[in-house]
Image (cartoon, rainbow, N blue to C red):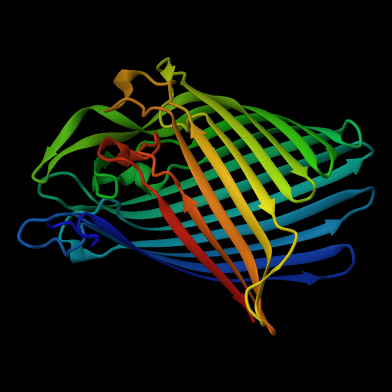
Length: 429
């Protein structure tokens, strides 16, 4: 009798706004200058059921303003060399709204990230070479509430300097076959949430603790990709990869539940380890009579925690994706002034296999079993006398399958989303 579709606590409200400007200045035939700048604002609120009729007050209320800039200079050099130089900057200002009346999960902070990069490429006969080098600096200023009783605020400042590089070699084996080898060294600084998380993350109903002693994550990666495109109607590609990590950062479930006045929560901590991640991707596309287009993809992934000699948790499960898209090569008159053209029907299926590369003691519940999700999308262009309208309807989980996804942390408590439909309209005038 009390059933309702009304969304009440626990729930989330997110507001997202983006303004962006970009442009290109052509200096001459061999030189150009590209730039872009963007401002982004995110307002995130997470609600829980609170005592004293305070459920309308959020437990988490974050306002984050981010400003990005990028400028890149490109020049075509002699002897087929092409050079690009650039600069990227990101300024983030994160503020907790005191309306929550509780200690925040993530502290107030201001961070600045700046990067300089250079990319050189050259094509010589059947060989294409790309090389890149990058330097980054990041400064974080944080005001965090400490866990001690009584609580007090403490200021932190972190500065990171990173150097990374990559190179790739593409061999044209024939007119329709190529082999691409890519190797690179990259670094990633610990994020604010990984360093300073402190308390209940209501969006996933868990307690998360950061570690201010986390170090920069370092990785060395190699990939090898083979492509075969014998015609415009068929293609095949296979890619193998291997990545070594030093100080790999991950969120690890602990062997305990945390009991609070709001109940018991799963407990997670950010930790570091040395790790390896490896696997391969396979994909193929086929077109029949220019009206039927098929896609087949398979992904295999494995990870190992080298330091503790156990599987690496929270990695995507192996999955298989297939789709068939049919295009009607004729238009349909809907009325005297409106007709539908470019009508497409897309049917797809995704199989996500059970994640077997984990131990039962590593998580709070076993990995969910294998599941299949069917999808359907119908799209068309409606043509009017002076304009046209692109529209589509997309249905996911067409047969309303009950399933739980391994990477969705809500799987501890509930099934994943059932049948859902999306209507999209795009009008150009």
